[in-house]
Image 1 (cartoon, rainbow, N blue to C red):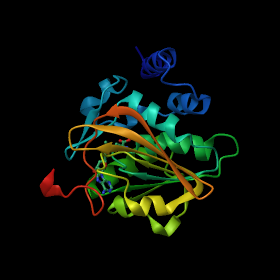
Image 2: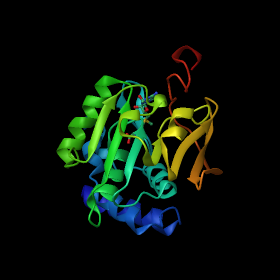
Image 3: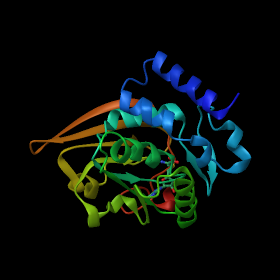
Length: 224
Ligand code: SAM
């Protein structure tokens, strides 16, 4: 079965099981070639709905997790998005599809990665898949956010945080939405934070397990 056919099937399954509802997210997942974000040796598993290793002890999230987080984030064409944890660059590409390519576009994704080799891997993948113009990958501690381009309409954290890093809340626009897996080192839940009319509204989403967010407002490498 071709990658295209495998992709269509897995997305259909996510729609049928009620995980995927937003037409913008469905279109983005159908357009992004996930196989270009997976190391060559693992590429044949690109459309298995599980996390896959991408090197340096890190993973690309399962397809359903990318789908659910993107639905919760609810990005809109034209949005400026900050992602913490670039990894392979796949989630950034899905976001770029929506904010920069759908409708009249005009949005941009800033994605922060602490491991420089992974940032290079992601840049190469984004280039091959045609998203490099719409995604800026920065090597830094993403728990500090990225002040240079703040405020952001949407912020997504794709590593497990002990709590929401305060700089991220400060850099979120009003109105804006932030999604992050929050919990302890073994187990987390998605926390959806909405900033609206100067108020912060928090809601818990599904349970999940992510690799750690390591940095000033995350975990220290030694305690993980
Ligand atoms: N979004 C990625 C994708 O689409 O492939 C998957 C992210 S992976 C589950 C988590 C990533 O967060 C890892 O690449 C890890 O190095 C990165 N990370 C952990 N702590 C970080 C921090 N403080 N700042 C930036 N990146 C961080």
